[in-house]
Image (cartoon, rainbow, N blue to C red; front, side, top):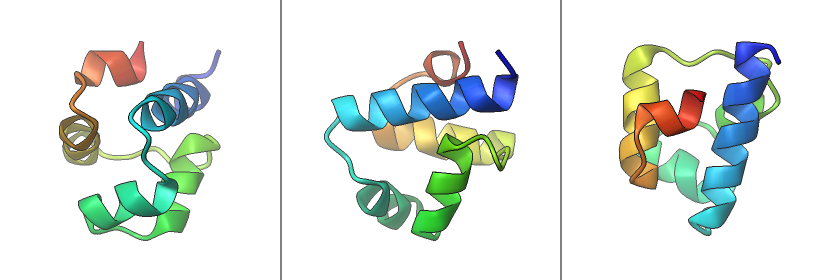
Length: 67
């Protein structure tokens, strides 16, 4: 599976497990909700610093997001 799509799939799964909506996560990261949607749909690849912020917000490791 393409890495961007895999990241998106993992992000969505983890986000839902933590009971976050895209809007909740976007607010916590101070980004637009559409940005989260684009990552989840494999249309956008976040920077490493954004990945770190997402992982911190969801209380998971970056490895859990990308593996």
